[in-house]
Length: 166
Length: 314
Image 1 (cartoon, rainbow over the protein chains, first blue to last red):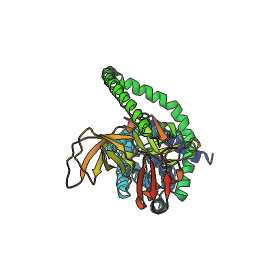
Image 2: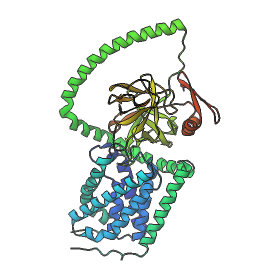
Image 3: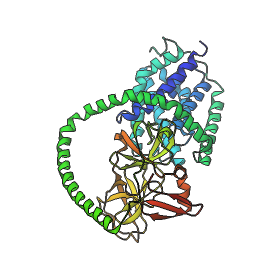
Image 4: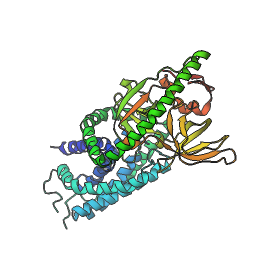
């Protein structure tokens, strides 16, 4: 039981990375950032805040290692989004719509931060042809996805069937 | 309003945040300093080696479903597209006959002058695109790696022979491709008889064409091909088409080029075994900066800063 939560979190992250890089990598219209969303939603669980930061940093690092851009870029961005999520998570407890909106806004912050850091470090692979449209479609897609999966994800990680029953 | 009984806000959250930001900046610095090699490359290759079998497994299941869904989505435009394709086919058949005539004449002239083809067939590895690293990352992940002969720096084209990009990292069973529209490196190209360079733009599929020592203006519709001066691509592969007429300004020409390849719709790519020596492929950026290049047909001989010879054939 002691290792159950870390194992669940690890499996969720690996699943998020694989689904992000395969399924969502092929669909042109739907463009969520699933790994960033999981990093944000982990702030709603009972995991210690410093562990949430470490997990989101590792998740970002994993995406960095799979991709072609600078190592540590997404690690910082995902962890920063998770940090803001930890500081504002009470606002997401109101209801499903509030959680979705909260996740969407944090995703927008994450995407803007990623573009900002990417520009500063000359990461042209991030500043591709869809950069301006993705600035809006990624937070929107994450918002919709958060409304669908946030309660289930929190219940799964916390192993608490009563979690986030609004 | 319901609030959950979580651990109280930890005082260690801020120190952890600052520590991890510093660690992230250190990682970025290491990456920049090592130019993506060394430990960074080992870490990247290791992670991709672990993840790629899972990606291939999921892609095997997901790809047919996505393609079927895309097919259903496009069904409304299929009839019109079919009509347009029939017209294009008739035009192409007429052009093919003309090209066959020209090829016959070329063969005759080659035989008359005793010309031998310098370039043998390039080694080609066909690979499936199994995904992308991130919605904001222009890179493509393919299901072929070092075990299939793929090496970092090798050029990638699509099934029509149009330039896609180059391999940026590779593992045993997968590789990541950076398309030319997402690359920082300029690509040496041939426009008519003039040599220029193509660079990518932020937030646009079009690329900027610059011909520094232009002799004549460039017209819209002109095809842009890879140049023999390129150390990234073999010569003669189509890249794109000039979008606007451009006149001479002093001795330079600047205009935009739309690549032929739509990265979003790519499902199959072809990796070229070029240059034949993988060592020179991975070190090509340094070579580009330090040496002068002399073209010998399809082969390229570079001199200065150590001599490296690459031949067009594999």
